Image (cartoon, rainbow, N blue to C red; front, side, top):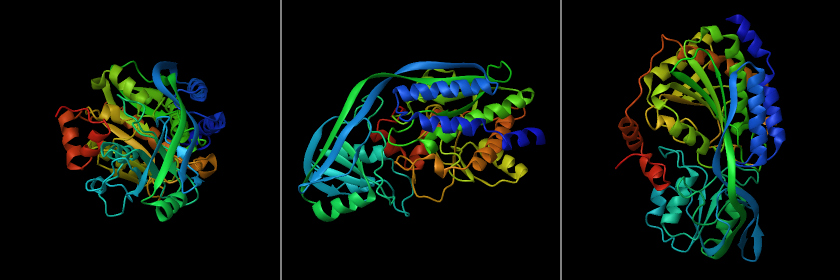
Length: 436
């Protein structure tokens, strides 16, 4: 065991890919940069010894940003458009809904108004409320426009897409503003008319998933995944260049341990995650989900030293992660709740056992993610290497004939979402796939 660990601790394969990815520039879904990044990942997987390396293309709704503005009281306030916002302008009275919790929308008169909501939730609230949930509550209430206010200091307007799978372009213009601009808007112009204006190019585009394999030619397989695309405003180092670097580093380590694999390991680096899990959704529709033994989805790793695992109520996954952590003397956190906001979810929602692996950072919400500050300097190669050791060992154990985890009935996943008060939000954003 010590030889592969030593090789992983001195490997530059993942970090070198990460540097190349952040240097691409714009990796927005459907862009030339995303295609270039996918080819870099393909070539990196080939170099580390993975087999059958290939790209699988699919159509995607393209969206490229132009100028955007919030105009208030004769001033123009800094903002950025939220991807897949319609290219429109809308004016209305500004209503600041604070955190924008579901109950904040219930009694508010928002018809024809411009709604502002924060990117976080209060400490006392029992679940995360996603940006798209806040947006579609505003749309349902008749809002004319939407302003998404960051909770992180530093003059950092947040990004993040709107739209649904059925209607990829949102209903009303939407922008992100920094915490500082949001505070200014609320203090000076709440109750007064402001304008939200978005310019964007909406077009047909193509994205792609990157595939590779290791291990025996079994019908069953373990998926090791990440996403290649990133928001165009930053380097996308944390979200999710680091996760894709992790997939390559794990492939390198697994290639050295291939004779230990009892089950095929299938690596996938998805395209178009940031605009609605499009790449993973397409793959999940085409794949025999009954043949997926487990998923290890890396989205948010390397940002901190300690890994956390959403395990979606699969006790065997909790136990496997904790056993690896105990054996290697490295702490982890397991979270049994449902986590419906990354590329494992198009499979897990139908009962496929899956992890969403990320790092603990101590930050509330996304921290630097989805802002200009998502840059390489905030990551450390040590964390990539340490976590690659843990996740490689975990994957070998998941692929073992000795490990078993039962799939769940989709009704059980739906019931868990209801019990965790996540169903309402998923329904309003069009992400509820279950029959009523």
